[in-house]
Image 1: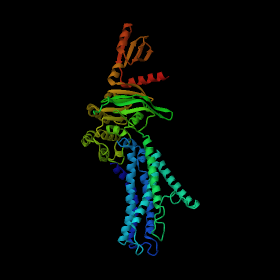
Image 2 (image 1 turned 135 degrees about the vertical axis):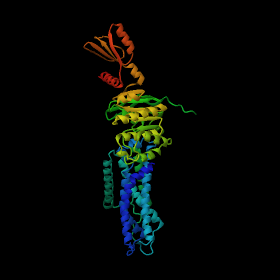
Image 3 (image 1 turned 45 degrees about the vertical axis):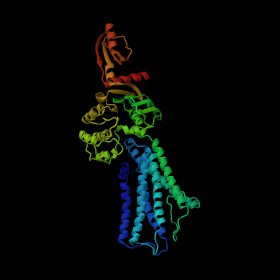
Image 4 (image 1 turned 120 degrees about the vertical axis):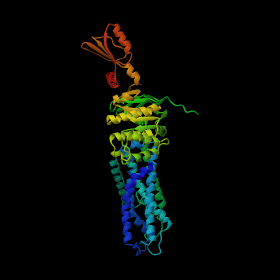
Length: 248
Length: 298
């Protein structure tokens, strides 16, 4: 039943995510067939990654929004006395929130990729002649999107758990995201890109080569490191919730 | 192996909770017998809600233990919460209707009873299709109580259940507590500062002030022992259990916490004219206890 609550809390975020996608879809259908990169010799993987990175902004919003809608938000809104007197371990709420949110973000990330493939299959989007999307790309591109949204989710979730005031928590989470992004640009510009492949950057680009389908070096390491960071952030959130005092 | 049922539904020993330099609860020893309707009474900020929070593991004690049904409320948190119903004035899920809240809450409890839901919806006349946030204050409290009762708890903990309610709803709520819950042998533990209401339903009273328990006793004993005795003229005797002696004008007034009959006999033997020896209500007893405690601290 707690998942039902999670879904009710997430509905608005999903709707906000879906509207621009539907508008884009309408645009494609109206102007079909749309030529994507037929004049260039860019790899399909590279093109699809660029295309979906636009949707990454929407995934960013979904991650941030879901992260701010968890049990920390409920506690701040005074619903903690009700929810946390239900007979469940406190960690149940953290991992139910996390499980649901990652499930939803995975559906959105893979859904977008599959939608793109579907549009290509029915020739609404026309890819460069003779080119197709490798099965690995169908795994790596959405996984990269999911991990990206997941990191943002975990940062926001931890903020709402650790900071009692909901609005303050959201502001702090945005500030943390901006600070981290700034760190990324600084690393790329001033530190010679030494750290660019692992941290600090949000997005792992699995296919960085325009004219090749080759996978980026260290891609699994980069994704794995971020996945570990997500788990650590959620474990810290669990630690905070288990010690947090609830108003009654 | 047979499970040994503890005699006490709730037990705290040396319970302490500090917020910065303030002792919200200070060495509290509560003993709530099984099957009792126990009222924890005290002023605002006396530590009632903090005590309840520690019983439900919403707050962690700085020292001491809180046990519910023989289980440590922190260590065996889930097992405690499975058997305890809780009613508060905090919001439920505001955007959810009564029906949705019932479905949501029912999923957490193996002993959930839809029959009880149907029954109390009728008894309380709750608008189940209305969103919680749009319900009146009275209906919100009834909704909390409905959810707590449908889980068939062995202990029902209510934090200021009648605060802000009109007399009709208050009466309805108190009747359900006595007729349905207490008569069934289940334990009711409520905090309140509405002493007249408490007096109607409670069979045990604990008085708390500044986080300390001033008194804990069965209601009948409280009524039987506390007496206000008025004597004509200025009497010089002072009983052992005197809480207050006021000599003014042509009379002396005693408030005694025990041994009133013996003291009246002694006064009469000394030739004093006892004008009145009357029982006191809970509110009067509470004020006398507070005043005596204040003097003791001075």
